[in-house]
Image (cartoon, rainbow, N blue to C red; front, side, top):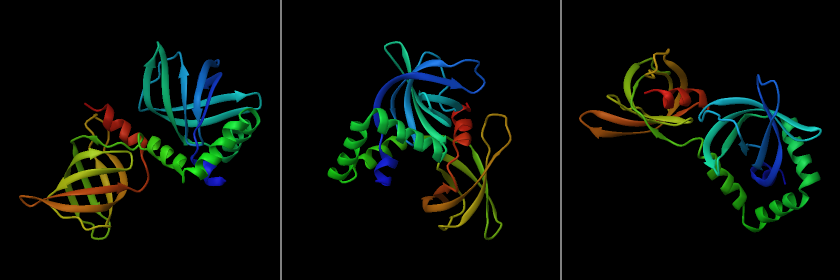
Length: 233
């Protein structure tokens, strides 16, 4: 039961209200679907894609959630702003509020999702995983990268080829042997300080002319760093 609850997305089409951090008042909102990992909402206001927001989402009286979210995507449908939110921070207490609210107001949805998960061999889990992949999509980007092999303290210069919130692809003059740990400084072309993060080499292969292409997995997903890269010209 826990796994089904964890990976299920419930379609509720709920008219409600949301209050953004710093706002003086709430605004009308429709929650099309919700899970413990995110929600799809429709609001009149324009929000910037690929940014963090903090918000209070009121599902019903006594069921208000205070979450931090990443705006994964934005669409305009019939003149309305529709957003896909990925919860970067949600407390266990608020997850329980979601569950209790759904059990109270959408019991058939909850029961149906459990049976579908069993009958389809975890299809709900697969669908939710596909939704989450939007956050970790890989973008082609080129900029300088410097990293330090944690085992040998060797400093290496490389060029980024692509990046996601979970990792980066680089080309360098030195072969990196998995799973060597690295400390990385991304020289993002936005006139800011180099972005520091830790990671591990996942794979490495020669590309010719004494150059090697490598895939590096970040120690933890970093949406803030990805946002800087995507905003940079």
